[in-house]
Image 1 (cartoon, helix red, strand yellow):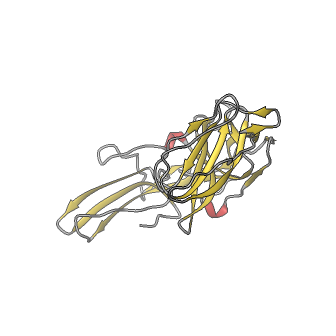
Image 2: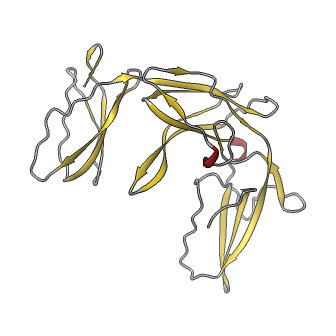
Image 3: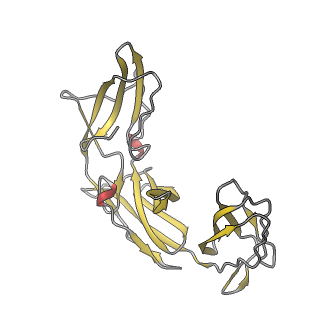
Length: 252
């Protein structure tokens, strides 16, 4: 493991593959060794906080083989910062800001979290330790991240709506991932002014009865973007209530 200044000690090397493999740390001369690896394809990531990241490498391990000299060069880490604001420029304090990447896994695209922080009293956030690449910024407003139950539901206005901000906002202000714009970072870049703007929008409480057997799994996109889900069994099916559903609805 090296960077422009020479060997890097104390860097973390993280293998990801068909079986769990613990991360290892480089020694003072930048060397590392991973043992007990089962055959299969692995993606290896390497980084050191405050120093930088290396591009992930893919390697296929065959039974009884030994792989030598799988070297990494750390590039300077990138930093992204900005503010989370309402449409009238009011800052949102305590919001969760996630930096995610779109990755391909088992033939399907998914969002994978790379970093996380909270906004300060000015709505500001700063995330460091990022490698070069394209990122999406996701915001979960803290004051609406409730975990309601049948006995502690949020107040519902007449007509079934509850006026609040959307549970999930993507940069620059999209209510769904389809409207999100990527932020492309270069190694060592300090990107400022990546502000996310949102406006308050009605959310709803929806109760449905599903005529299915007792064994049921309910799927909906972006876990955590809906306030909560509660349900109970009945003779004619399962009665389920979703709190804080955005106007666009959810898919079951």
